[in-house]
Length: 418
Image (tube, rainbow, N blue to C red):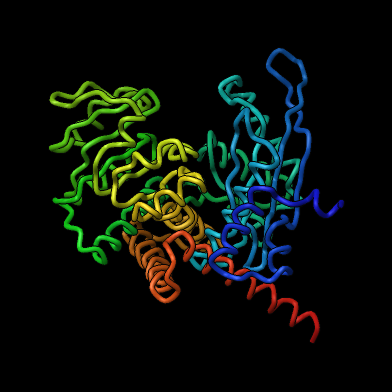
């Protein structure tokens, strides 16, 4: 019973759904439905008014069969252990899928960072590292930015960790500013990786960019960068949206013009000849490719039957619910899952870590060339499994990722018994 309490419920659901496509031994299933290590703690913060408050902090190191664990740190008022466990599980699959020498991890603090002054934000970030510094390291667990965290916060964390260890240790964290060992190209790596995947799929499906209509939900860092990249590659972006709603022109939008007029990154400007639409309407537009790049659970059993795109590229984490997935599959809509579509970020995080560990600095051109090679190789492997095992892209991705983890665990056990 005690063992059952440690099970990640969402992870177990993912795995049991996969059982329909591939037989997984009970031992392997048990191995993957529970995180290897879960850290929970209260993080103290002395507010500017002198009052001391405590916030819930988490770090889950899900599986390290393939190498040190890797994953972001998020600050959000709804962060909880189940969410962090699920995200760590998905990171383990993502790293395995794109053949990185990493396991999966995730961390977070249950806090709305908008309620903190900059001084308080820095204190909280440093206190988080004080709480976990003995459980992370360049060869143990490597954090990175995630929701509501950025390069500046990573810089504070690297500085605090280095103070505690008595030497500058840039490889402990990725997503840092360039001046502290960050990688060129990191800001657009997630979006560029997704664009490379789309380009590769286009070659397989004979899609011509200028004839391919694309709809993008979410115009934050990932959404606006992939919009710009695809627009520059001559794809026709017919609609984009932010949290307030979207704009639509069936003849195509000038993304560079929209970006130049954006005064507030969270607000889309007025655009001539573009119709205002809601996010609900945007998701249901007729198009070739729909790119959810906002938040999770945007396509559910309630609206899946209304989706008219031919392909969905999941740039957000889990934007399509499991129930919706089944409906989309019956409609013949191809879904490129998040663990493949948005893996460009962790790939370039790995490049940053590698550069730090080997005292190297790569140009942006070199980073992008290596990113394209790495992510398209993963796509080719997944596509091959789709054909050989007659399954969709999501299941093929999960099968490849899980088989690599299980095989690595078995090899470790063999070596232990020598």
